[in-house]
Structure formats: structure tokens, C-alpha cells
Image 1 (cartoon, protein in one colour):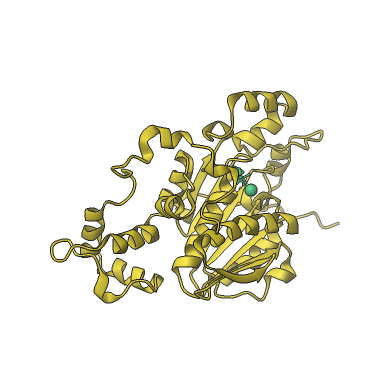
Image 2 (image 1 turned 60 degrees about the horizontal axis):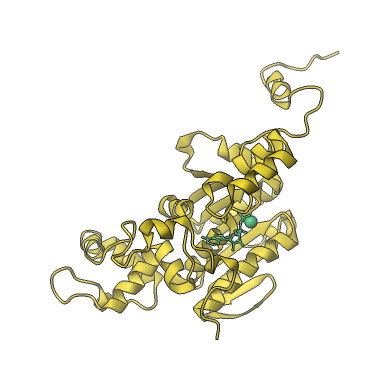
Length: 319
Ligand SMILES: Nc1ncnc2c1ncn2[C@@H]1O[C@H](COP(=O)(O)OP(=O)(O)O)[C@@H](O)[C@H]1O
Ligand SMILES: [Mg+2]
């Protein structure tokens, strides 16, 4: 049976591991046994949420700070639930790099990842999806991307992780089902395929800058009842569409926004970036590897100037 994630990720040791993130004494960013017990003591609601999320926990095996110490197994389960990098490392042999750590540390119900090509955004989001499906019962997670092939590619990452958990039951190219009744479903990014899903726990839009606005607006209502989460991940594609609009939205609109440039990714070499800059030119390079919203298809006028020339308060002339 396969016991390790077999993508190239297992063989590459990211800089973070060398920097001591995986020291035998544990990671400073990972909850310690004691702080976990303390957290549970002061937050009974957190424990209730964990019990609800995990069939492996019951009201009687809650870790105690002072009385019977929690067993290693109980703590391990709790850590896996509360700590995504730990879950990824212990179950898949997947080591997050520094910025992927940041994604997991900061992510919220509305998460926007504006990241360079090949920086690992789809992979960490696949970990997030599998974590959600595995630790919560009977939830639906929806994944969409501009093309069927991209959706399938995302599902392929999901399936690899689910297989390592030994829990994937069946499904097809577009659906991974878990033994607890949860499922991760891939749908084509067109309005008709999207409609019809409801009470979705997590919606993921991969390559979001290339998905059209109509699809995005059709996706939003399915989060209303479930109070579900929404993750948008992409490399930019000009100052247009919902991905740009959400990225440019005011800070108080609830998005956690994370930008990861090519040079921030330990798996992309400086030499590769320099060669890409030469080949792509400044503007395209800025889009693909520096995650800037630039308009590449420039006509006679700068699109930003044209956009600013329109005003909503002027009535058209009636002739
Ligand atoms: N933490 C990591 N350690 C090792 N390899 C990784 C890591 N994160 C991603 N990768 C690898 O990097 C490559 C690009 O990842 P991917 O998620 O497809 O990038 P993106 O979606 O940003 O283009 C894949 O081969 C993936 O397995
Ligand atoms: Mg991707």
C-alpha cells in the first residue's frame, strides 16, 4: 500500500525544514500539548466544535490539563484537526514552506490567494479541502476552475491525499468520496453546472482570474445557508473581473489576502526567474511571478485611464 505522497513534493526539502521548523522538539507554530489543554479549558465551545467535527472524539476523552493527562493518540487527533501543517506533515509527508505555513495560519472563511505560477497554491488548497472533508461528517466541498482539465488536475491532487488517508471510497474523475459521507466535487465553471448545489461547506475557485463573473455570482448563494467558506486562488489576469475586484476591495470586507511572489517560493530558483523575465518581458513577468494586476493587451489608451473616464452621474444626451 502507498504510504507517502508520491508527487515530487516529498523529495524536495523546503528551506523551512532546514530552518528548524521540523525540529524534534516540535514547531513553535504548532500547538503544544499544554497550550492545547489550556485552550480547551478556557474555550468549552472549541471542544464542542472539535467533537462535532470528529467522530473519533467523544465528550469523555477531552484532554485535561491537571487531571488524567490526555493520551498521545488523543492529542495527535486534536493537533491534526487544529493544525493543518501538522496534519499535512504527519499524514502525507508534505512539508509546507514558509508561505504555505502563512496561508494555513491566516486563512479564514474568505481567503484570497494571489500567487505566482507553480508556487503551490493548488496543492495547499487541496490539503485544506481534504482536511475539511476528512474531519467533518457528510460535508460537500465544491471545486471549480476555468477548464475541465484544470478541475480534474485539482481533483487529482485531492485524490492522492485522500488515498494516503485510506479513506477515499469511490467516486469518479470529478468526485472524491470519503467514508464519513463527505465529498469533494469538481464542476465545470459554467453557470448551469454550478446551479443546483446547496449547503456547501467550502467552495474553491482555482485559477479564479480566468473564471467569468457570472459563475462567481452563481456560486455565492450556495454558501448562504451553510455559512460555508470561500477560497479564491489565482495568478492575476489584468484589472478586471471578480478576482481583481475582491483583491482590490477594502480591508473591512472580510477577506484574508495573501500574495506569494515567485521569489518567495523555495522551489523556484533565481536562475529560472531571471530566464523567465528575459523571455516574458517586464509586464508579463510582473503578472505571472510578481502577482501584479497589469493590463497586457494594451491598445492605444491605457485601460485604467479609459475606465476612469466613465462617470455614473452623467445622464446620456437625449436627442
Ligand atoms: N511544500 C511543498 N513541498 C514540495 N513540493 C511542493 C510543495 N508545494 C507544492 N509543491 C509542488 O510544486 C508544484 C506546483 O504546485 P501547484 O500546487 O500545482 O502550484 P500552483 O497551483 O501554484 O501553480 C507541484 O509539483 C507540487 O507538488
Ligand atoms: Mg494550480
